[in-house]
Length: 115
Image (cartoon, rainbow, N blue to C red; front, side, top):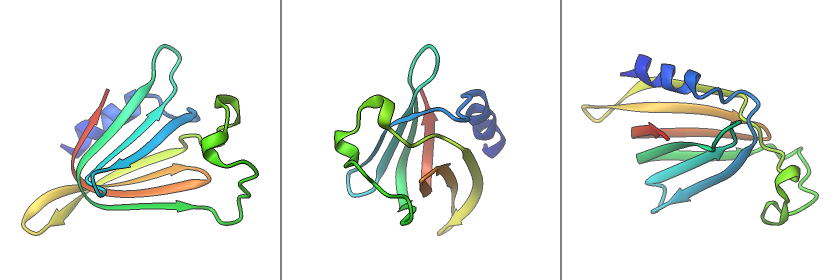
């Protein structure tokens, strides 16, 4: 399972792609990351989440509120995505570490899809 997900992630050619949106919904149960690609946007969709940590580098100055940024001003770019299997109370889950500097994400979930 993890190898298939790693291949899908690698095949999404995320490196240095501009992140267009990051959403966390339903009390952290779903997380969606949308980033640009040459032909269409790519979405990473995490569901049945148990841990969602969003850390913004405190030394990175937000000169403009992110909600007011134009597309060209968005400073978030996909840099690295790691996934590994984790045990969750007798069930398997996945842990994702995503670097989209100046944000680092840690997501533990049971379901992941790319579209």
